Image (tube, rainbow, N blue to C red; front, side, top):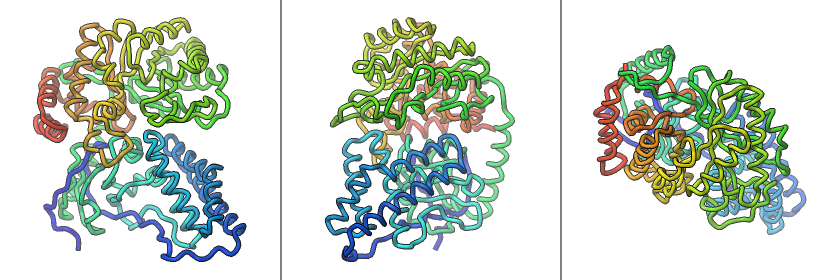
Length: 553
């Protein structure tokens, strides 16, 4: 039976907004029969297994054609994984050991998932893709319904243990009101794609799977609150949410506080398709799309054309470009980097230039050419910088390429603690709160079981942000935030009160941040920042600021 009104749950709010509706759970994954059949024809079993994986890859490619942007990228990546030769070889070995096709795929993928989990970082995130590939292939082989999203015939709140990247990418925002998962963290696919689609989302919500289908709940993607309500209240909440969305969509103009203090609101993008006119520029242009899944590095000319397309879409506006952020945790075949036991702490980001300096030199040359051709205001920053010496060397490379503004990402606690030294040799810094949380709290950002430690409201993380902001203010140089946390309407107030000068986020959450800033003076933001920094833990920091902030509207 559905829960009575008044039952309250809580999790981590990762995509702002409020709504209400009946909950429906994901369909369960296919279950293998207890006893696998004997393998009498290994060749036929291997052929069947590979055909199922090819079917999954083709289906994911077909679905990719129905979406765009980040969602399409997610599906394309999973499609390539389904037909990866390494997986095919592992399946063949399982069949040779006497496992039928469906069991061979299950066992082979379990092996890869364990290996990915041990490596962590990017690979741990890919383990969710593997689970989805397994479920789809097994369903195909056993003639069972394909796992996927419920279709109750009414708008609903999607509830799941966790969502695969493909499921999240295929969400229909006209049918799904919000997402609530038992697992997941602030940088999971669920969080990122929910923001990209403008859906309220709560992750790490214990007890949510105990709610019966049809139970009506209210979801607050800012505070992480999930509570059962009656139908009348649900209708009122949804009507108010619709009015609020319409009001936010009507807002325009530069980001600023109620007393006129400017806080430029910028976009995080991965390509020209992510650019929109509602922002004041781009605060994070991820350039990895040019390098992924390649056996040879892109040429300077190829990069120049791609960058010029993005720069042109901005019409001469400001764009902060991050140089290649990859490495052992985000492997690129053409780099030929050695395997590492702990790739999240290994050769990644700017450290690639130690072994492959031409990759950085060519990228900076391409950026410089595209900037000159388009007249764009291009700022360039490097990821994974730990010391002032690294920052100085990067800044020199940027200036040799003919680019005027050189900066670095603050993602490592060492860089945050020595921000004053870094700001002596660069023109700006940008805080990547996703990795900063990971390294500060010693918690893998892809491990949903550690979502509470990865909460950007953790006082230790906020203290580092405040330290960097103070260093920027004293040096009179810009300090931005470009992590997912910048799109939190409450944290945006805290960051502004600390002295952060720009906030960069995904497009759909920008109106809510603009409205939140416009509702508070700079002095009020400073007061909220003090409350957050004085809190004993992340939960009390979020709650104290939420209680003290003015309601928007």
